[in-house]
Image (tube, rainbow, N blue to C red):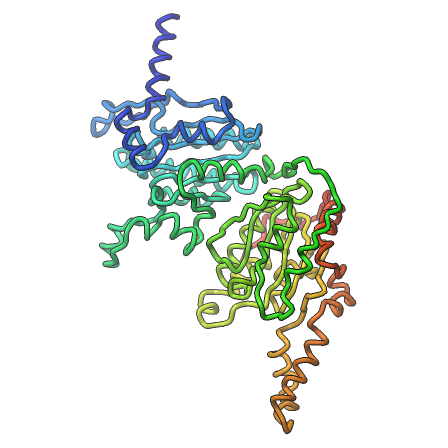
Length: 513
């Protein structure tokens, strides 16, 4: 027994050492933490239980049997975050560059299977040079095994990926299929083909950072939801993000204690400019409506004309979708529709109620938008809201024009409560454009066509630049004062907390392309 104890201690010590002191030092020189240090920061202190520490690879080609590292380049196990169970893996770049072997993949798959069985979130800390080329197709098969599990766990348990080093080739598809991706600036990158391949095929010269760095993917492609400064911030964001989620699709989101007060917010009465063409910051509205310092914006740097994120209202977790008037006047376009649609689908998957704040002048016109499929991408957002069965409340703060009115969680597509501020304008289009079409002949025939145009614009504006016609038809449930919005929302969400909707008996719908 004493000999066996000694062997166990030696092997566990070897697993904890990873690739050795020199490689650990190189990892630190790159500004990166080791896999085990990352786990210590991510999880509650002392909660980590490792699984598979003694696993080694089974490769004998290329004299690989002479290079044995217990754990085989990935640390797997479970622990808690805020006292709640999670399963995770952390790739160890100090062992074979974190490359994925057959056994490396088996360890990750085992943890994913356990996460699904335990109905607990699954977290991946990616830092890998890719497939272990010494193993050929076996490593490629390992990636496919992981992808398959990502798909079947989707909508069952939350999945979050942190990219904390290289992630290229086939490795990128697993993070892409998880719910949220976090990247570290300057030390992480994601691309299907790297700069050398790009140079060979297209003759373009581009750096790894410009091709697939955190800034690129957070601003241009939207592949990543958060771009952070360092490993520690990455892990802190992951801890905060998961605090808004339930453990699985059958649970309710967690709540925090909250002490009720009057809940009036007088500042909201002064945020909307008198002139309807002037912008205001919707983030200020969100800050007033939600519990203090509870808002976590998602995709902050991508498609900024729409805001998505999580917050708490009277201690309860909710998702927020809001037009942003300071960017492109808050119009919907290809990227904002795509961004919001996926966020709505996530919230619906995990029972997170939705608050939608509307100030939208319509869809962005232009050949670029039409040729890039604004019809299909706009339909994605429409589909996502229409399919969502979670509690949904809309507040129209100002403009709600055209088809964008319908798409932004209108009463017609199943919203539970629709409120409007007195400043709301609900119409097919703005007064200037609409009056020019409706009163075209009168304006042309008038002695003073400019004066007649102004007169007719005011006529149209008086009729539609208010929420009352929509309220008369029941499309708006209540016209409310801005300062009482928070109180109204708390009470309205409480009434639909147990909302349950029957759905057609089908395999699944077919989301627009």
